Length: 261
Image 1 (tube, helix red, strand yellow):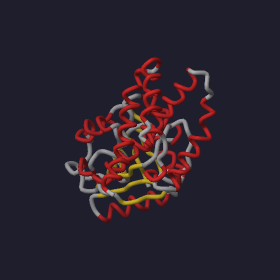
Image 2: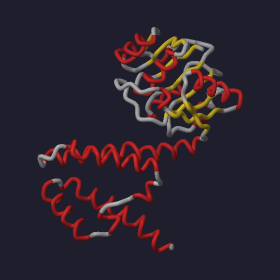
Image 3: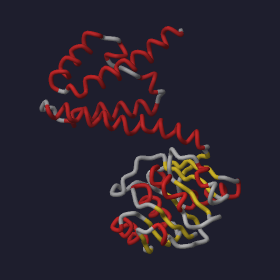
């Protein structure tokens, strides 16, 4: 099947290569930046353009893999009507396309992707949606053809999945970055925390995370928390409020459970 990839970011790179590696044809790549468009196009043996008006006419599928702001800006300017179009966003409603076509859908990868870091396609679960059953079947065929797993989800479910993913991935990684900074600035190798981090995530994945929470906030140990807060105030005051907010959230989650019981 033929595809035009509109976008050349992290998701576009992984999806375009997965399609090409499984006998699909990437006909063209668009990006506002010529260098980005050319880089992905060379990988996929495709033509490229940085002029949205020069997107070519195909009978296949157009994949919008852009930021939400760019999607909202460019979709109304799409030069063709009644084409088969999908986007890869977790937070944009599928019906953003309904002014230009009746065959539209979503192919959202629920995974943290970086264009320069390889990942097996079967490690990327996709959430899919379509405007009609026939086009949904087509999207299912595409996902199966690249060897990926998928689940059907409407736009609201996909947005909630995206929010959950931000907590699970983006926020947790940010907290690890903070832990790394605090450790290294106090001459503690971050590697010392690796076994704890590994065990914590393995335990949370094999159990209900709520049931395996530990720590001073969970125990409501004010003495330890105050020592932590005092040190943070002295040396890392930018993280003091974050420590308080997360500790309060942990305490409230488990204290509310006790009150309900």
